[in-house]
Length: 198
Ligand SMILES: [Zn+2]
Image 1: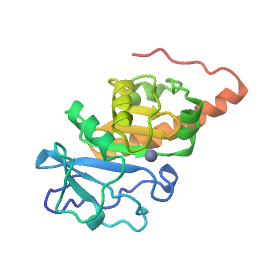
Image 2: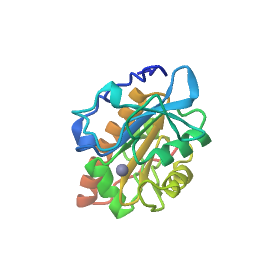
Image 3: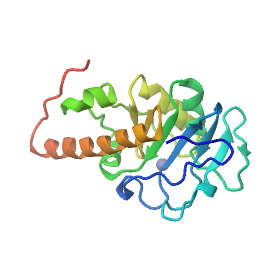
């Protein structure tokens, strides 16, 4: 999915509701014609209500909204920090999906226990140190724990997935939620066998 700067026609991300109940979670992407500009979902609007006009276009350097009347997600500081430090990242998705969030409150990393996880995530998904929602510290901690992988767990909160476009981060988030569920199920029976990282 590509967004144009003029209209930020990202629209509502087409994600399963269990990934982000209500208005929780948020998604952003660099706009197609200028990597210093992003389009991000607004704060406090449910995905059912969200239309393209609600998407907020933001200057990465200043954090100011451009051509937008709405307020950006309160996690804008985290998105800005990740984009600034990771030029190859062009989309970011943050969710409170239930099984991932269960791992986050246990502060337990998600190791590669299924073959496809090595390719999808690049290794163990680590847990970032805790920081409150909406703070720059949340972004700095996420960045540090992310490393070269495609996702990170935010302690007592949820996760962040990064990638080249919205389709990729959505796929990562869906696969991570499924993997977290399977990992937690297996922990109830015994000690899962963890695959060796690449
Ligand atoms: Zn959140």
